[in-house]
Image (cartoon, rainbow, N blue to C red):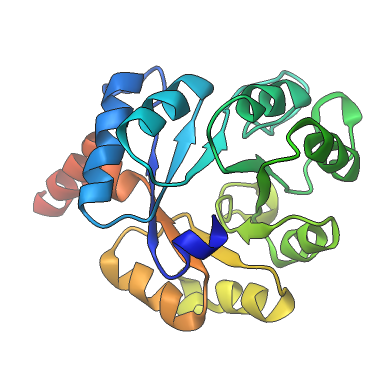
Length: 225
């Protein structure tokens, strides 16, 4: 999969239950539209959406399952239960939260990665990280790639943005690890996506700026106000 997405745009096609486009049928059509626009991959949430997307496009899929647990702030593929669900889908890669935050039932990230490898041996693993230290740790644990998905969304990275200070944090990660780095999170304009590629990322993931019309509409309304 990594060869197929190199240098290209991966579109995150997700809609949570409280969002107007929440529907596997709609996400399947969204993925098809992304493919027609030139996307080289899709990121998708839940086994049902992944199955529907795979029926509508041949693009490789990064699969996740978002689920809340009371004892942890981690919600992107947080436990082996979600890994098992994704292992049975056609996704080529599984992304999971690889931040330094406490995990469900006190499990270590190292143990979770080992379990994930045994449970889904045919899938690549993506580390969703928020800091430079987490990227380095993810590489040491054997992840196939790291993604800046959670930068700015954790206490350790609060207030940070991938584009801050001329993408300084992204550049630091690129210099610190050898595994492919995927730029994701706050990449909300074509210019930012292009700059990420110029700096050396393997690929770029864009979600809300393409697939969440309520957010796109709000940006116009706020600018006009």
